[in-house]
Length: 120
Ligand SMILES: [Zn+2]
Ligand SMILES: [Zn+2]
Image (cartoon, rainbow, N blue to C red; front, top):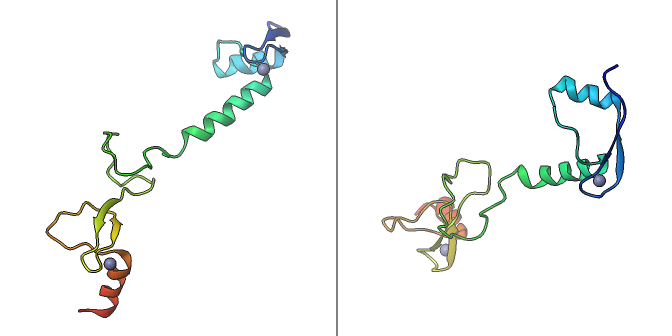
């Protein structure tokens, strides 16, 4: 048996925990060469935190700032970028999912629906 239980002090909370022979073997099988530095509790805490912030693109959801995030083409799963515009019919400020070019009138949602429904 090359492995034997080992006591390690958690770098996060300072608690001692046992890195058991069993776990060492599993680590080795997965190719991990490092010993765990954190107790199980802290590891799980970290995992939970990382999972939370990592997944969905929650950044840049503020207004239209051109902070140059890089590659935001609107194809991603995130919320669409909206551009401020003024409705050509009622003059209300609104937001549209495309950049208003100035050539075409932009309508707020209400007027857009009214147009579509009522023809001209
Ligand atoms: Zn800990
Ligand atoms: Zn309108």
